[in-house]
Length: 89
Image 1 (cartoon, rainbow, N blue to C red):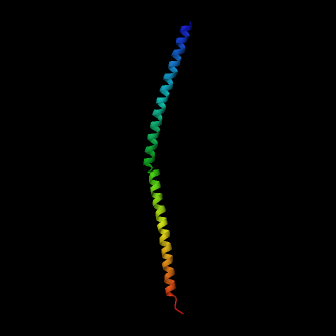
Image 2 (image 1 turned 90 degrees about the vertical axis):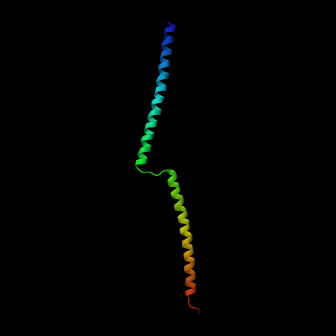
Image 3 (image 1 turned 135 degrees about the vertical axis):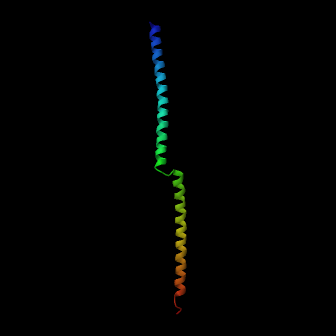
């Protein structure tokens, strides 16, 4: 009788192991399908990638710096024109 209960326990353990393996396989398959669907949805929505966002952000920062420099230069030029436009006393 010990052999019979041992065999039954072995069978149950084997079934549990097989079920766990199958569950992991199903989990991986579901994750793959969901990931694929989400990627397709994001592509269809025309969402930018992080890399694209960072590249445009960097371009905007450089443009802002250049704009600030040009503004300062313009202010200096205008200040120089005002001084030269003043009548000599």
